[in-house]
Length: 330
Image: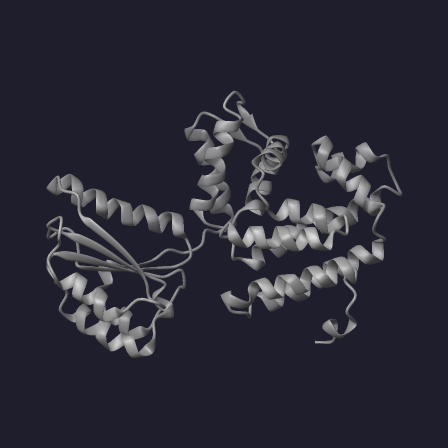
């Protein structure tokens, strides 16, 4: 087992690439040995580190080797770190420990205790990399995707390739007879998927449905999307579209407005037309300012508090129409 290290430290938010790196190591073990290892998963904030270490040091019950995953190590108790370090300096020979975190940095003592060649940071993709990833994914499956469709996908999901791959694989199934995936297909996918996302949240918020918006927010949370910045970014894009629709309708026919703004799909166009009648230009501008304020706050809060922050945002956007003057003094 010399080709597989006893400890790996993988950090960073790009979960898709991280999972592929882990899978490569597991595949290397099975292809080399022909055996199936035992696999265990623990979370650092609730695990007994002494029990994890005992598991790593003791022989396997059902196989010759085991892989142990310690998740969210950025949340490890300070008092547990010395015990973990003692193992990292003298790891067992019949197990591999994966130390995983979505944060970019973990305790420096842990980082120093793992060999550099077994440490890797999985950075979030840049915008052009995400676009290239999506184009490449559909190209490999003998399909094309339009720029507008790419933009909609990136508004739907977090910036991780595992999220993008999940959505794209379902698009391939739903539109297996389509050679080109456009924004109209994305809109149909959102309608048929029965999943709540930034688009359905926007729909309910712009219809002044406060309770429905809160319900959708909690469904989004249960789906695993814990990124308020991503949600706010998607809402900002749509509210800006709504503002432009409201302004341009005073100057030109609606079809020219939608063509200029690249808003395609009858369902989407109808929604923009309907809700534009429910909001004044000033209200939409105030909600956009509200989004900007809560975007700043979202970058400062802990993961545990994001749902409360978004509930407040929805309250002041839907009930107060973006009006809360004291917010914008700082």
